[in-house]
Image 1 (cartoon, rainbow over the protein chains, first blue to last red):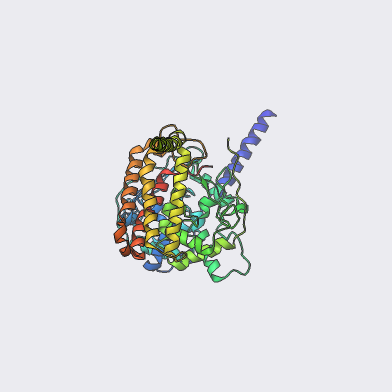
Image 2 (tube, one colour):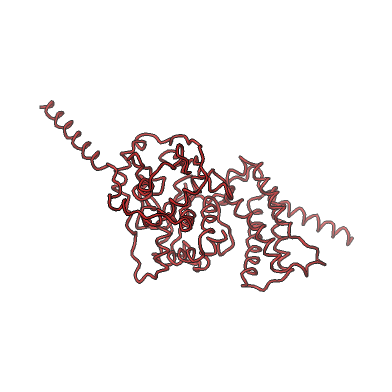
Length: 309
Length: 151
């Protein structure tokens, strides 16, 4: 009897494992969408490059000026799940991504899947980039192809079991990879819609400004309402229009802060937001205004901080 | 008699000043940071046209920022790492050399636009804008490295 039960348990285990294996398989873009990927426009690609903040992780840490365009990789992101190292994404054929096809790049950005068909860790914010249009992704690709090559070889991620099993990411994706828009804003103006696209897509603001659960999934009910930093022990500010967030900022204040790094009370941005702001200073003023318009249009949510020990 | 009162009063004032900085450096640096915040706010308001620009005000904004840059070096002694919800990063103490370098840059950038009182008529809004931009860039670069807003 016991033996029969054991066989049954093992059998069930195998079925469950097989089912999970099936569920966690990486999915890529459909063939007809891949075939229709447009040719990229470098000028718009550069706007996407700064909006997307690519250089903040993929250029050498603390780079300024031209060095920001050398996507040598290597920045280590220390998270509760391990240390992720940003790869070299310069157009070098051997150690960068110069050998990729348009489809490879689109699958990375929009599906979080590498050219060899494995899942990326969501430390690479494809969870947001997946909201980008195919056109903008291809424009970005065209821009990246114009940048200097680097042969820098980046060390492997330092991520412990079980998170180091790429198929585990597949299960995580089923739960948390939701490329559709997070919210519908009634009577949204074209400016607000543009802001929503920039903030929740290429800008990937929610990656830090929206709180996460224990296994790194978003709390969609508290979109952009701030929370503990994914990296380090900082608290990321609430950027919803609640008075505990940035409700007292006017639209022009938000746009000015993104341009200059100064808040309306003339405190300055600090920490990782300095780098983000310096990227945002490089995009067109109307895009900063659109971001501001969206941040004033989203639901106001009160900040929740855990009690201090 | 009068003289000794003045000496005493001056001594007391000096003593009181050093007491705040020595016994409560966190309070002292917070107060000084607030002076910089208010000065920067005035500078920004003048440049944005929300307040009238005057060369005197512009010059004083730079002087307040420079004053702070000269004082911060003494206001982060060992033992003032925690308390009063300080947002000073532990990196200030683990990387004192880097922090000092940032302060030297802050001093240089805030004094670059200094003018003598008799030359102030030449300190127009554009000149102020350039000097202020250079000085204020230090807020961000230093906060990027040496400030943490904790959980």
